[in-house]
Amino acid sequence: MTGTRKHEDKRSDDVLPAPPSDDPVDALIDEALAESFPASDLPAWTLGADPSRGEPSSSHGPPLVKVYGRLGNASAYAIRDFLHRCDVPFEWVPLGSDQAAREQADLGNLRDERLPVCVFPDGSRMEMPTIRQLTERLGWFRNPSRAEYDLAIYGAGPAGLSAALYAGADGLSTVLVERWAIGGQAGSSSKIENYLGFPGGISGTELAERARQQAEKFGVEILLAREGVSAQLQPGRGVGVLEDGTRIVARASICATGVTYRCLGLPDESRLLGAGLYYGAGASEAPLTAGEHVVIVGGGNSAGQAAMHFAPHARRVTMVVRGDSLKSSLSHYLIQRIETTGNIEVLTHTEVTALHGDKTLREVTLRQAATGQERRLPTRWLFVCIGGDPQTQWASAIGMVRDDAGYLVTGSDLLRDGARAPGWPLDREPYFLETNIPGVFAAGDVRHGAVRRCASAVGEGAMAVAFVHRVLDES
Image (tube, rainbow, N blue to C red; front, side, top):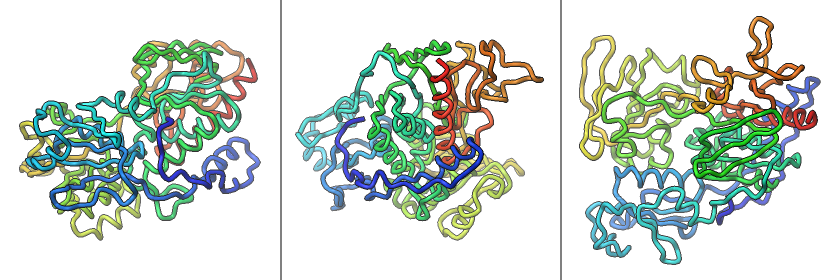
């Protein structure tokens, strides 16, 4: 990604020394966890500015993009979320019935069907742009520069970014392919407070942006808004095919595609997605919920972080939890904060059973499990944080071993009763993090048995590169 960036950090070489370790695997983990990304200025995006109320657009200089549209528009949400997670300074201008705002942007005669509109500093504008079109306009869209790479990494969450950083630093020709935005699910976290080296916490977006800067400094190519659709993976040579037909050839590969957000499985869910219903913590939307009632489904850390992120803005935040408490799924520090935040309520033994609304979400139905009693709760903001499913639908077609839940099986977990992995062609056993296809590794949440923590994903990305070196040396 090569677009204009603000607040580039001048201390990106500062690292914390890794503690010594006698075990090579432990040493790799320690090195990955001990290397922290340097501090920088606050992100320079702006959300929720409303000219009709006299709100300022930004304290960090002019935005690179102004986005005009209506709340509850799925396309507008996708653009806001993408720009927010890519650390692009932008201003959101909600039109509503404000004719002055429409005239200011020369939108007076534009039909709502052509919204949202993105306006750039040179005066050019794009009506209903796709994410691909935005990446092209911002100068980020690129094609592979090499016919073949040492390493191809799929997925730019913490594991993929870590792998890219260490591979690039080691001099490997490396390409990182991401279907959406840098950071993966961690990129949507409003604040990560239990990541080593950040006592004040750090947003997932900022952490991802710093990692991107480091990876590009070491020559890693990042292909953004590019999704892989198929693969031909063989020992010593893998070919990944992207949705536009681009082929990525590499001597080794790392799958770090993570998980997709799990759905509620309710009628009208797809229709209301982005129009009041959102998957994940919704870090880009918090300022837009001022004075409103926000509902969050889930009892894990992502749900807890979202609740704390929305609480300063929303009138009330309701957490809907299927279990009997937060203690089994939420970090202790988050439980303490939720309990002491006056406008957060936690409804246990409760589920969302129905969604209501025409063009946008208006109400949800809540059911109390013990009594079966149902009630309707008015809300325009429902955020679903109930975990995810691994992005491995492509794996079975190429014979890659998955567990019953779809996660990629690696290393010693491939051995069954002492027997080698099915179809394993080499005399040696699979390396730790290596799949049943030699030279193809899995790291982070997509891997069977992975610890679902940001720091663990960073560690696995670094370790995977160490084993990639062994594979390349063997060939």
